Image (cartoon, rainbow, N blue to C red; front, side, top):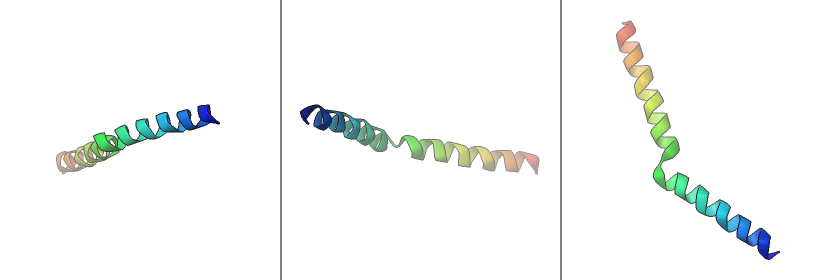
Length: 43
């Protein structure tokens, strides 16, 4: 039971770090900007 609690603690720590770093937001904004520049270049 204690090992399961330890695994959950590590999982929540990693998930919190990824969310705090804004990993998904950074990728989303990168793809969004890439599509806009590509659209402008295509005319």
